[in-house]
Length: 113
Image (cartoon, rainbow, N blue to C red; front, side, top):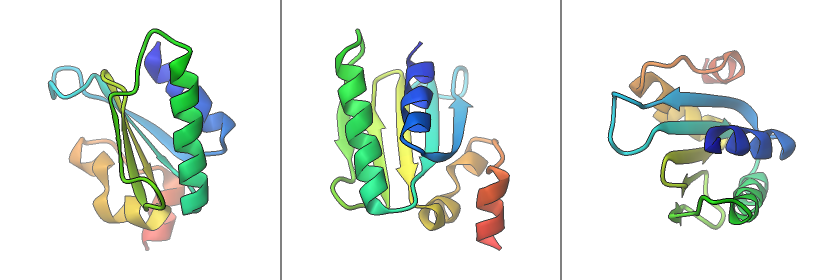
């Protein structure tokens, strides 16, 4: 499954606070969001590249990438799954999890205070 591949690649790249937001029945944009944090723009760029390379070897494809290079928020459109990679402070600011009724991971809540 694409969500599982995405999560595995992000975990292998040391992404933090990985959250999956199921969108089935809530939106026609995608089936799921995968949201994760990277500690630096360099790590976010590396996670983005790692994900793009891993998806190339599958039946799925990268539909688009926004926010590269050197951004605090990168969006990777994989069709059925949309990946959001944030710096922690940017993630707390936009808080997509709250918008979709999912709690922020505990480590991100601690940085928001």
